[in-house]
Image 1: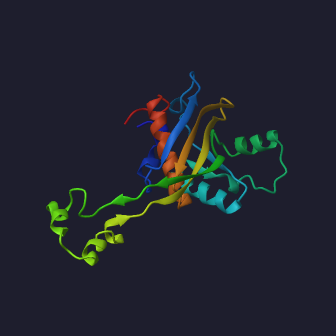
Image 2: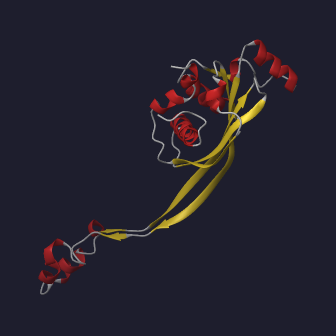
Image 3: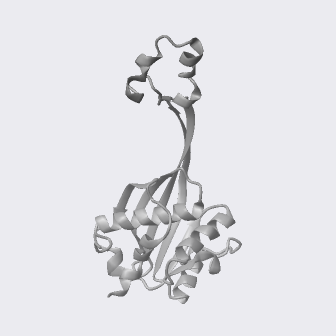
Length: 212
């Protein structure tokens, strides 16, 4: 099996559910595919301000396969290096690809979830509604207890838009980019898994990676 198959494909086996993450848009260089590049050593760069989040994100991807290397091992935030100096470091270390991830936006949205009736009225419990005639108020009023009605409530959802880019250092150009939207984020590591799963799925779809 060709070596390019190790790039990103193994991420599909990572834990975490991707149901709350989806691709918003993507683009690939029509002349180059990720498969054609046959990457052997790829730098993973999380472009975030928080160093802890950077390391969690990079470590999560790097742990999936030895082809990925964390950027904080080679490029620290304290390095005052220009573009040419950074490229030289990567070339000296024999990197042939770079994957970057950055948070594009974080938006909050509040929605009202209406209440629901679950009780004996409205056709429930085999017509017991008719059996309530003649009963005292206490019996009748109990039918409206919280046991039979779930009140409405407001739900706040935060959406995270993340851009993932793949660069070829041999070609010195961007060859794939995609933006994902993630909701109901509770664990950064699992969200990274879900993003990469969505990316791999889209890359299979557009021909950047071979189908299963």
